[in-house]
Length: 102
Image (cartoon, rainbow, N blue to C red; front, side, top):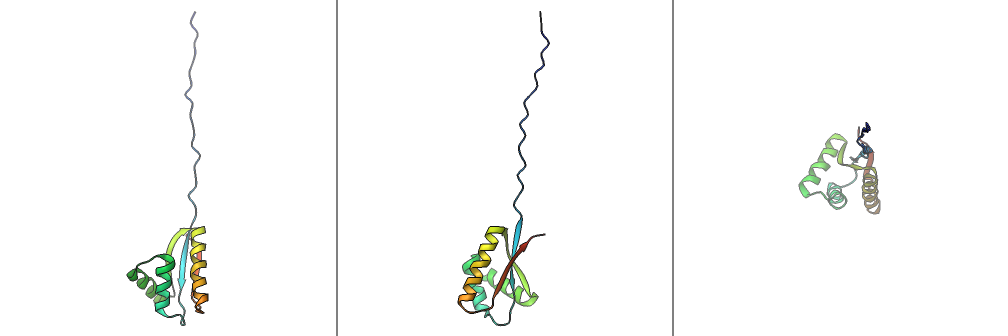
């Protein structure tokens, strides 16, 4: 006596993990904060080199604002807070913001 048995393979499905939404950190131009201080903040907080920080500062100066870095929400908010705290301590109106990337 032979039985007719069918064996079905077990399929394991991997849950799709969604990538975290990215945020842009923007540097906004103002007419009061010295350029040297802006470059210093970019070097210290965002760990940019001298040339990169100079280019970002000049782009913000010419265009009104400039994207400094794109990262996750937590990192973006932390960087904005650190940069704004440095500016506040030095009594400059330097402004950074974070917004979702499109």
